[in-house]
Amino acid sequence: MRNIGVIGAGHVGLVTAACFAKLGHNVICADNDIEKIERIKNLDMPFYEIGLEDMVKETLEKGKLYFTETVAELTEKSEIIFIAVGTPSTPDDSADLSSVENVTMEISKALIKIKNTSDANIYKLIVEKSTVPVLTGEWVKKTLELMSPTGIQFDVAANPEFLREGNAIKDFLEPDRIVVGVENERAKQLFEEIYAPLKSPILFTDVKSAELIKHASNSFLALKISYINAISQICERVNADVEKVAEGIGYDKRIGKHFLKAGIGWGGSCFPKDVAAFIKLAEDLGYPFFLLKEAQKINKEQRLLVIKKAKELLWNLKGKEIGILGLSFKPDTDDVRESPAIDIISLLLKEGAVLKCYDPKAIENMKKVFPDITYSPTPYDCVKDVSLLICLTEWNEFKTLDFEKIKSLMKIPHIIDGRNFLDIDKLKKLGFIYKGIGRS
Ligand code: UGA
Image (cartoon, rainbow, N blue to C red; front, top):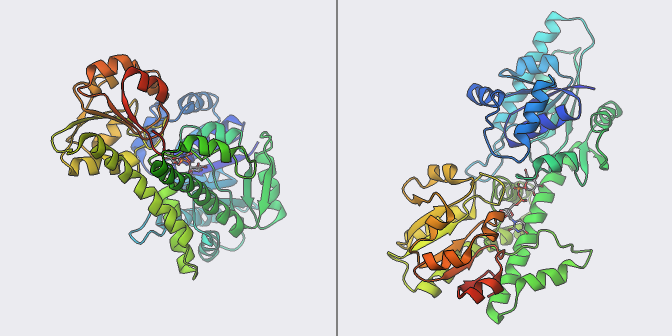
């Protein structure tokens, strides 16, 4: 078992820390947000992730997981240090790497202190876990080399995460693959050891290729969704069914059936930021990535499709009461960052619509974005007297709602299914006027 440090107790950091602790390693997780650390220690998770609270509880009780506010303590106690701090977008769409740089400087300072108080042979493996543009590893290494005293041995590696929110623990423990960019055998062996309990294949590459794999992966998935959304636009125009088209092409193993769900487009804290950063990075390297720019454009157009459909159903939206079910960017999370719901609500408000919104987990977060709209305590309150119901997130609990009751509560039974997840035949039989995305 190894001593592992994880810097950053955000979605990626906290899941990584808890999962490594679950695998039996001794894990120390650092975050400079003292309040957040206290909350986690009291088992009040700062975000919703299935299974996380139980795993944190179990590993804390077993003494496998420990929290600190200082990178210095973490550096001293860990042999392998994962950097999992945020890399948000700058105004020009690049990844803001200042937190990565700050953390690297703090590790350097800690290394100097350790060297001054010990004669032992010290080795540290510093690993990028956050999504970073290619060449970040080189900067981390240069910074450590410049700042750290000779005599401390270290390596820099890249081990990008592929964790989906809402599925993060499973994605960590049963990944399709583990990607590791290393510079030498010593670092490689450490990775083989810490991931030994997992059955998944490990792909070892150089650091730059590993960094690129992350951006290339997320961008490809976003591209795939935009592709099926472009097809949905064609389906709209000829009354074909995009769900059937997706099924038909997805059977081809070379294409695959995943990430072919048409709808209001991709959102969240990863795809929009990562696609934009990849485009910017490519541009900086002299390659204009038009393919990805088009994927972004298609994604925006899917949001507009909902407004177009609302107008087709209601004519003018001014003063019309509309119910919105689903606010998070996808189900099983309370995260509303870059949620399609934000764009759609903004557009509806601009048209003068009067909104009532419901989500099983994301209301509190959405209140920070739209403090002045009405939030309903239940889905049934949300649809009372509305002339249109718009479903924006495919939460399981929405599939099993009593739609007969919903119809009786609504003023007019119009429904827009932004995720094509409702039972179209059942709804039509009940008398709903249904509009999906690329199917009707
Ligand atoms: C994504 C990747 O899937 C993870 O592998 C990656 O580790 C993560 O970003 C990250 O970079 O940290 P996540 O943002 O949690 O994970 O969510 P996804 O499940 O990938 O969904 C992203 C968006 O695409 C959501 O808005 C979802 O509704 C949309 N989507 C997904 C579709 O519109 N259609 C689909 O078929 C699939």
